Image (tube, rainbow, N blue to C red; front, top):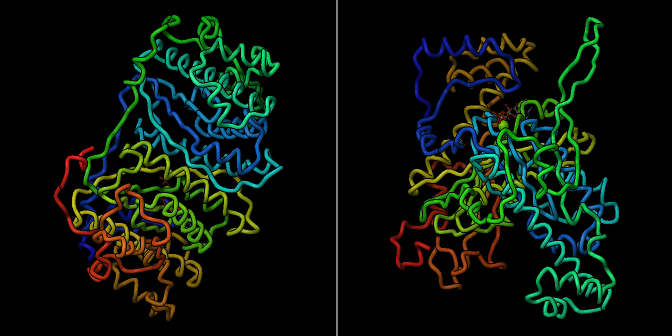
Length: 560
Ligand code: GTP
Ligand code: MG
């Protein structure tokens, strides 16, 4: 159901539209479901604070095991991670510094950045998804011994630091963690590889060991002087952006100086004053602090309201350009849609609390069960985990879908989480996205038919479609091209729906409830993929287990 817009509004927006010529142009109709947009929050971060995007690769032990990487530190993996950091720093010029070690990354945005209007979730997910897609894209260049078996899940958080001293303290704390973790790992793997201990025995031997004991043990039992280990592992890596003046030749042939930024990687000691006075010069003087525990309060933690539906919507970053660069077919490229579907399927398999998902164009919405405790309902962790896996799988399967089209650069996606308090708003949200798909697809189908088969210029096609309604577009297609819109593939008209099959009734649980541990059981789980009409009641009536019945809290545990 599309509301009728007044002529003047239409004419004004048509004129604005005609000034731009795009691949997929702007249908002017809106659906009645659009009110659900008001549930979305921006998550703008306070001005004049350092913004740190902290990312952590999950399941690293499994990654080492399955790919037979060298313990405790694999040099190729370290180089790959540094290369992925570099991709992020090249793309986001507002990142001044990245401190990374082992599987941890801290990207620091300039205090005064206005990128994405300082929207925390947008900064977090764009950086996180790009790191993930770069990791997958670059894997074969750095790790030739073994093909990547699974794309990464990355857990993320935003930290907001009020001044220069807290930035120094944060970095110092991170480097302390790097040092302690690496010393322990070196001792552990020293005992396993040099003394032939079983992992359990090594853990037992190292129980309660302090720094001195670990150093001593390494020296006496493993013949290793920890001080001689490589700095990249002991101290981590600092990728620092520096502004430099470069001499370039202008178009008219004159020689001019231009300010450019370069990224330098070093393994410096962040506890030393010299780093903060000579290498990274801050506005305010800083000193080495012993007490760093206060920093934990600066994490932007958002625990999502219990018992509300959580919807994570991801959207491709600048896919208008990405689709042009990679020769997507217009108006719809089946390869790209199927690739998005593969990524969404993997996300649903990895996170069984996602009961339903809906995708179209460069976006996907994931509905997480309202009683789920996924990632302790921490918003940042939920969106980063989903978007990192999605982006990784997208790149992982790129070649198998696009065959002859090389991936020119790594795609990124942003993600947001929106809460819906009841079944009816959740359904309206899903309807909104499907109505949007319908409106866009009908417009784009008409537009490209006029251009490709009707020999219209793009401007001419826009003029023809300006102010038309659904029935007008259908008439244009049938009268001018003998084409029935309903014969278009459902995947284009309706988008793609995925949902979890009903959990086995033998488990004794009522429909719509998750098991005790909030994880659907293996074996009785399956995902259905189709192109259903999800606006109609019928879809939901036939699958009552998806939304379940609204229930009251039954125990205090529900509020954990
Ligand atoms: P941001 O999301 O704001 O970063 O911009 P965007 O360029 O990604 O635009 P938006 O998400 O609003 O729209 C997605 C864009 O992706 C469309 O406008 C198309 O240009 C492009 N796109 C998505 N799917 C297809 C496809 O199947 N074929 C073609 N040719 N383009 C597509
Ligand atoms: Mg997009």
